[in-house]
Length: 164
Ligand code: DQA
Image 1 (cartoon, rainbow, N blue to C red):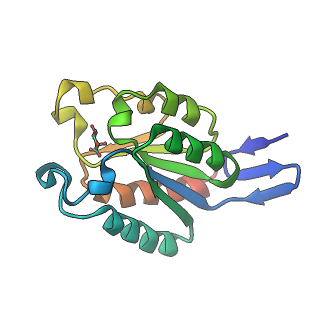
Image 2 (tube, protein in one colour):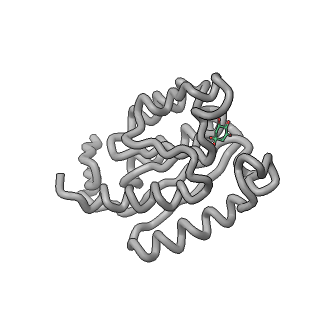
């Protein structure tokens, strides 16, 4: 039997504190830096990961960083995070606007979730204005460029240490 409290994970094998944050990226974000740079900028996903890892060290949190173009893979990472992660930062890409399945997976995760969008989706096409993920997210960042990831990470680290 698994019992989750936000940052303390209890399993049959005992209780441990997790300081690992899972950062997930959805479809087409592997092409960051090349894909529509006028919207998403010139930094690559590897640059984003490097900035997050540098900040993670400073904040003393562990990071797992993934990208996939496949919905099921993102869902599997969220399921695994139920036992390993203290929080999830997710840029679901276009799955934001379509995926009830990712929303359902996030609803099984009991620690904080932050949704990140590089662009300001509200300034763009109407179909980008609706997010299934926002129904679960504790916070949403949009329009900060790739800087949004480190801002989200800073906020997540605060949530992990804030008195509840
Ligand atoms: C995005 C916005 C989505 O609408 C789009 O499909 C993406 C990237 C963003 O980071 O701004 O792939 O999530």
